[in-house]
Length: 281
Picture (cartoon, rainbow, N blue to C red):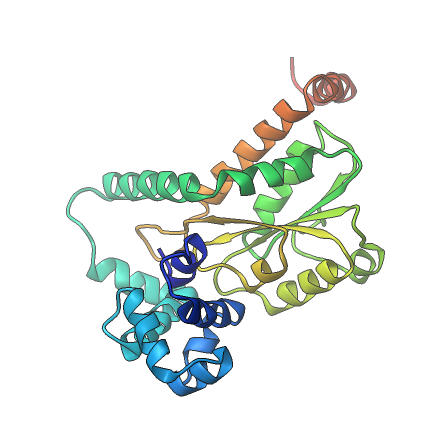
């Protein structure tokens, strides 16, 4: 669990002064914790010893240890395939590559998806199942395929769903036309794309609802999102895995179908009739 997740999970164990430090850190995570303890104390309006006690309350020996933990998180957040390759080879377990990969994937998927708060999942389904909302799914260089997968399935069970042709582009018209009737499902994983984050911020400012499907370190887009659904990207090799996000996507579609009920079934029947000549008997 990241430091941010630990803070978001429960602030009740901290003193009132320590909670002030926690809120400053959460508001500008992790940058607020990468300066000096005095700077963090000033920002929170507390004394430097309070910052040290805050670090110890998190289980660290002091502020330098907390800062190192933040730096370690930051390094993971921007890890490249090359560095992941080196780490995976240095820490490779015994056994056949298939068995290693399956074990790691199944453990990571189960742990990450069951850790998502049910309230967040239900909120995502509520937005996606609302026929008054216009749904657009977008992603990055690789996650754009997930966005397209979501959109193609949702289109079969509800109207007003779209995805850019390449699964990646939010254009000027999307930003100009966005309002509170829009839902943007944004897939964004580490090595986050600056343009995507900028555009999502503009969409949120326009009133659009943002569902951010991201990794455990959280895309900067999560800061303006209505719903945040973090998934594990751990893999046994050099490249991050999209398996957890893919399964989450399928589960969301199924939950939306259940929520819509007969109206979705009726649309599926009409979809099958309209596309009957596209399928071999």
